[in-house]
Amino acid sequence: MEIITLHKILDRETEKHGIKYHRVRHRNLGNAYAIELHLLLPRRKHSSDRRTGRLTAIESEIEKSIQPRASVLTHLEAIEDHAEAHEHRPPH
Image (cartoon, rainbow, N blue to C red; front, side):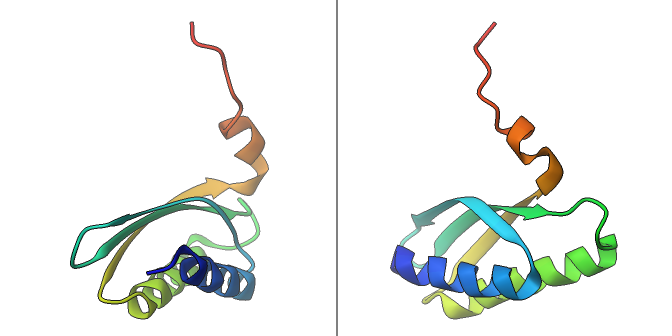
């Protein structure tokens, strides 16, 4: 799997569903790929049922497009809280 291929899939699918992504990580497990990413969603714009359907569609598209096999783990973030959630804070 090329990282370019993964990002092309993510760009296409997230644009189609009006979602943004970041923090993509992947690991070659030998006979499969483990892929982890964060998806940024508007908090109030859509119901949770619609969000779940869109996320499942994105995960499924990645899993069927990456060979030989892929397992996808997504983390959901509210786009409104994104900057604050990733703010760099000094250790205590």
